[in-house]
Length: 369
Image 1 (cartoon, one colour):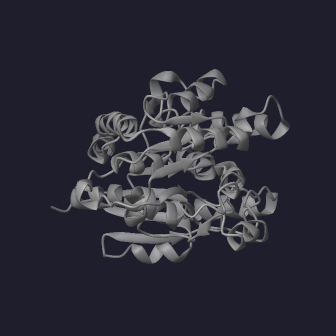
Image 2 (tube, helix red, strand yellow):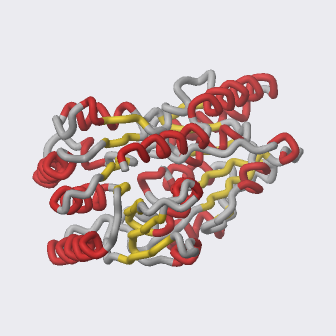
Image 3 (cartoon, helix red, strand yellow):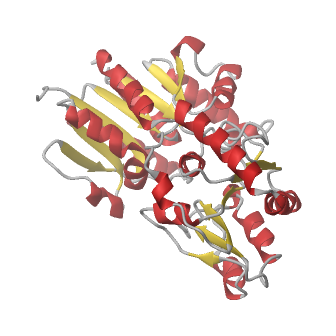
């Protein structure tokens, strides 16, 4: 069944569209809609093909603040919005949310913004940049059909700053997870494997993970594995030279980016996610679906999955000592306690983060078209 209507998704890059929105795009196509994708060109744009999909590329620097670059991004988006035929636009991440929403409002195009994390800027007491972004958000989102958040804390920040009206907000818990037959994937091993999967950024807690791993570098029974993309252009990245000493002294094993992490999750004893703050941690949701114990920080986006220590082990953010203590607590747990935690977390995630429920929210927006 083909419907003569088009849906557009806009994000920073094609990697995020592939990693977090691929099933959403497939859903829209299966319902007979055509789909426009707009993002910065990267290697993942090749993951999208077919006559139902049209791809557009914009110059966008996720964290850059150069006024000429930002103007170029805005104008590029404007030209594409003027050119394409679309009945509704979904914006993801801060710049598409602000620039895209302003342009959509001006061109009278229906749009929904998904705030996938407020970022650390909103946590600062006061700054000129923070006030400017709040002002821009207020102007950009005032005519949006809805504004989505991944957690209640981020939603309250927007309401507290009077950026958006409460009745226009909705909680959509991330990308969700597909539940698989994980029992067949379980593996027995004499080695305790601590696994961290994240972009190689300071804000993800990578430095704390490295420092905690160093304590066990001479222990053959304990292994620390780090998986994730390293972007040297990211100002928050942990430099490879800094990581090299931990790799060389065998504190950690670094595997870079992996498209499919199922086998790594299956062989891990425990997932460590010492993030400073999240929108909602997709990796933790996936780990819970694999019935893996989790060590994480007491911050929004993480405590939404591990609300207390009956679900997993919590530590303080930006605190290597606290993470080390959490690792030692995990190592002291007996199998019954670990099993109790993972079963509780698994059931909680299955009830709240099943991808089928997330896709149903997207499907409900089709009534706007």
